[in-house]
Length: 213
Image (cartoon, rainbow, N blue to C red; front, side, top):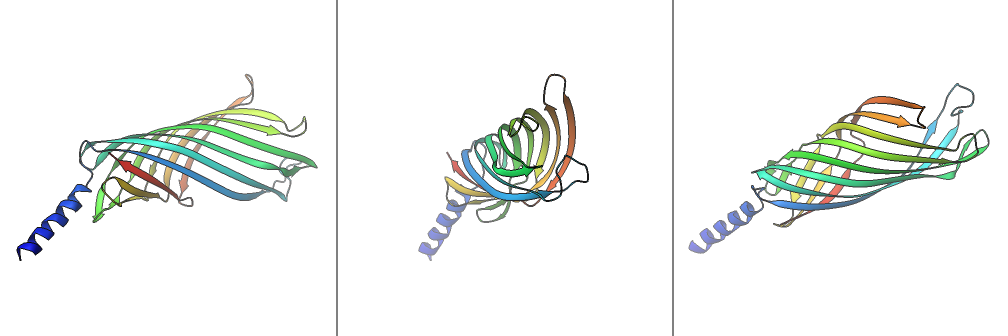
């Protein structure tokens, strides 16, 4: 009986040690890759004629540091470097077009941990977002261009979860959420415009790995 009682206490202590407590910290790293394509059509002459198909590959590497300012409540700062490219098989009016996009993202964010089961948490996350992006289009003189964008916004990851594998290691999963963004486009000093967006995206999933200390 004593042995069973001691074993139960030890198990409870082990579970408690996995809880997200004030003062806990973690670092997280991730890498993602996406290979896909899209088709555009337009009735306007000279722009995205019907049947324009593009294949795009994108990659992203990043990291995050987080600190729990209270039990189950953490602040974090994430930085990432996305890159995407289309091969020179993309064709517009007989011209082969290639486009490379480099970006720098920074995202301070907050999250609250809701315990759903032993070691398993629901972690909705609210983020402020800034991105600086350079888009380089290569092709004929007509289509070659360089574009710089800067984006401010915020989003909330509604479907985000974390599983604590051990006291120092966990796996997180994110299945999307809602966002609001404002992007400034600058082709030149005289050619600028802005686009505002509301995004509802539950189509892209992501996984990250966290190391606690």
